Length: 270
Image (cartoon, rainbow, N blue to C red):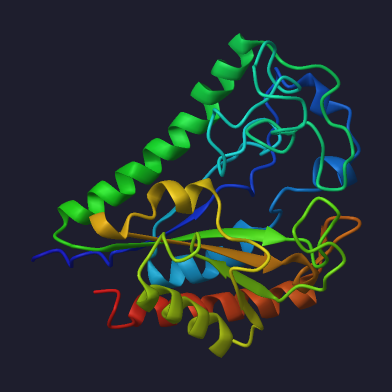
């Protein structure tokens, strides 16, 4: 029996991991509210039912983003995060290694060594991105001319002073395409309409434009269609305690499943 051709659609979740490497000792003593401040906590749980129902591949990590942020590149560092780096203090304080949180709470008191930086690149960055590249390759080799990639994240319900929209109440979903560079308009329209029909209030390219994942992999000229999707954390968790709220989260899981089903079953994703 011939095997069915896989759908050219997959999801990445780069910021839901909570494991801290042993070498990142400065993170171990932090209270949970600070340690989990910028983690996309529970995004994998929100997406898992829909991914499983649709047989949609997913690439995620177990590692904490403060140690090595997979939506950055290893060069996104400065002299505060890595010893001897020529980039000015504060130029990448929420870069590949986080020095402060989005609420400007300190994380790193002293920069790490160049050797530890490279170790974290090898331990966290390279395996994740190798898996992403392999997923693209697998789907292209199965005969598809275009591959569609959704990069799933979460965001605070209010913009902070470190964001482009300080004090603004945010939409429930923000879809970003690196200012129309990371995918064709048809994919943007499909994703926006799919989340909207699932009951979410959706914004486009505000306050987020897209990150390094969508920037790196979004190559419409090569058939690589990548979009970033941010989920408002107030929909499913207590933003202060970072705890899951079951009665709210279960509703969001169903909505996400509806959105994924509509994307995966569309004529565009063939």
